[in-house]
Length: 353
Ligand SMILES: Cc1ncc(COP(=O)(O)O)c(C=O)c1O
Image (cartoon, rainbow, N blue to C red; front, side, top):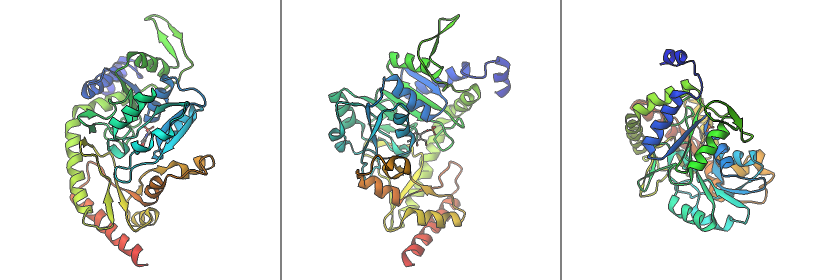
């Protein structure tokens, strides 16, 4: 395929990008898919496309990957954090409405680690207050909520194809929408703000270079052709892993809503009686690559100063207690057993010292 791409002479945003976009749109049953250079680029362009202005406010969960908040900052607007649910780890929809002010323009629910957020109440609040909903489905490609694919429920959905995601283009992302005006705006903004009339281009906006290359798109196409197998395998592995982990009484798994069907991007556990950093250090010393789940953003150095008087107790707790365990499609049963055995030993070690 690499030779074919080189022969076309179009190395970026050519026919493979269009093919990849079409495959994603068809799979998600949505009108438009716009390929970009990363999940962060997808979110940034989406906020720009809905016309976010300086000092506008955007509601986001307090427990998420920094990109969800950083893209709001990049547009000189304000991220407004809402605490998350202790079971799903996703934004607590019941806490959103009291954070809405006349400056609020959008809500960005995150389907954390592939787990669908509770979209129905979020959409109701958004409709009532006339807010845009941009789903951060960075890690939720293939997950469903009440028979709808994550990313297709709000006005815009954003995916990441970073190597830690369900499918990867090494770096890359996709924006999906049913709104043609947004679709056209996104296409202009990802290519510097230029629009072609078929012969010449004119600069309509001050845009970005967030294009995807042809090689990245070709990688995506190959994985889309075997996507059902990837999902089946991932689900089987997760179920086996979870059944082993559930035998450790101190370990709690992230819960999904009854009508949702997650494709888990990461396997993140909550430790009842141990600090995650201690366990992570011990696991790494045993050559098991563990990490924190994600960030309570108000506790990070960058956001801490401006969110000094705010409390998000659940996000705080998850930040201190969650551990992401190794989880990849080629993982064997003996590797999973090894991780679980070592984890059990290390929890015991921490509790008895
Ligand atoms: C929830 C969430 N949003 C956004 C991103 C950003 O995606 P990317 O790394 O492709 O820029 C990530 C990446 O891990 C993520 O987990």
